[in-house]
Length: 206
Length: 163
Image 1 (cartoon, one colour):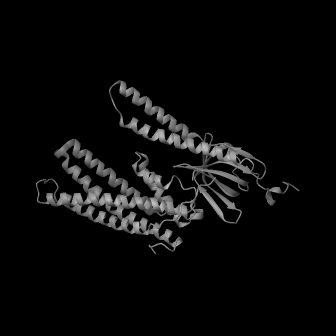
Image 2: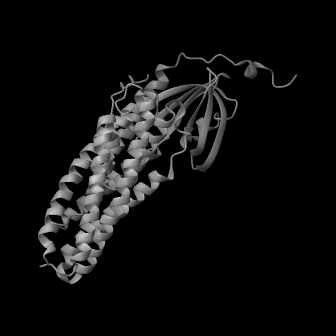
Image 3: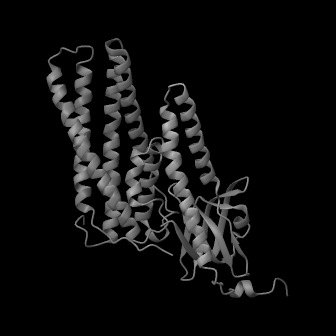
């Protein structure tokens, strides 16, 4: 009747990578916001080559961060089950997959991270556990960053230079929202990993 | 884990709201045989099952977990009651979303048009219809396979209602 429980796989190393990459992502987002702000309405400025390099580095770090964070989320969700949390919604693969499902990716990743937190805090009776408001705050910052980034892209695409100021402003806003989002996610990863590692003393995270 | 069971006694069942045949709870807390408690937060149940989800009810409770919600689809209590009712609302909703997506796509194709929203309806509706259907079928199999189970009446429940 019950599926076999997954075995615990230490996610401490991946958590450390994910957190450092998130800090790097936040630093590059700050650099990008500053450069955008300094070079607004001046597309031929001397900042352009620097901005291009920062943008490329930001893309590379974002991709690496996404891989590390999603890998960690998969392991953390599976480990919560291994520690005894049953009736978690979906599966570890689905915890990652929600980020790529249109519309549902507006809410389900938040619920997955929140449930992983609760299940790590008390695996045996996890559903009644409280979750910190920080998780909601992280998700709000992440959504606002994404929405302002998409709006900036669409405005830049549709209206070209006439609306360059608005697009730049939204780009700065997107970068600024992504900084607290990165720090909050790094904190959430650290806390969840700490709770799971405490329940599994052999973890390298201890 | 799509389906599971809880053997215990309901300590608390806090109803949040009712909508047609569905009952949505804030939480239901069970006391397990080993003395520990276990809670299910925001479960849904069909009204027939919900009628048995009262504090003090003891027996086996059949739980399902869908990708985005969870609920109780069956009860076998120590008073001899046996109820199975799976809430099918989400499954029906996904079928409607799928049919809507197919209808809009077909209509637009006749006009040489295309809608991203119709594709999103299909991308969500089709897989989720089959996911919900699969969970319902698992729940039906689970309840049927456990047909021989009869909970032992607890001492409290076995007492006569009045002396």
